[in-house]
Image (cartoon, rainbow, N blue to C red; front, side):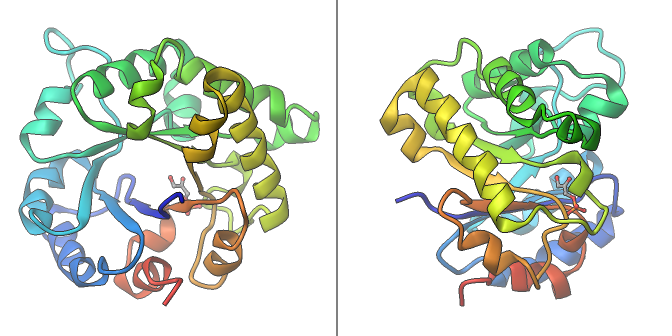
Length: 249
Ligand SMILES: O=C(CO)COP(=O)(O)O
């Protein structure tokens, strides 16, 4: 059985004091049947790490350098993340791909580095509206999954979650219908099966992201191939994120 994984990506929001206050509100809600994660901005990781330490609420980062150390102005390394208690790193988010030009091979370097250093990875994939309208969803998602996981041995897959985030549904209030999302999740599972076999495909946790809200989370999570959520806007307030964390209670 795959364990549901509910994650909040805070993107470029919250000062340290705001982040600490929200984390304190969320800790008591992380007591259900799922795994739970919050990914504050880099500047708040250390302070939020102190709040969630020893609790079931996991600490995530939103990105990471592809290099281990050195002359990389503005970047943050895997060792720095681990040093402040980060357990999971989100890689290949569509905002990294589309605004900052990150490509699959570059993302793959980060995935390898994270896994080699015992950090879990949430690998984000998803098509733009233009790609959807051109009938390219499967081709785009396949390229991103294969590219992101290239050279990753099967033994590391229990440290990998895939997040399907259709770009047209992010921050737009438009959600993929549960059926449409499930169809892409099933396709991702098929790609994993081709790469690693049945067992790996069955075990892979695949989150949905894109305008997940308290009002739609239940129907999304009810789908066979949807195993969790990667939440943006609704993760910024306890009022909206706690009901998502507790969608099954
Ligand atoms: O990009 C997302 C999470 O990584 C989704 O953002 P929204 O929930 O704001 O649509």
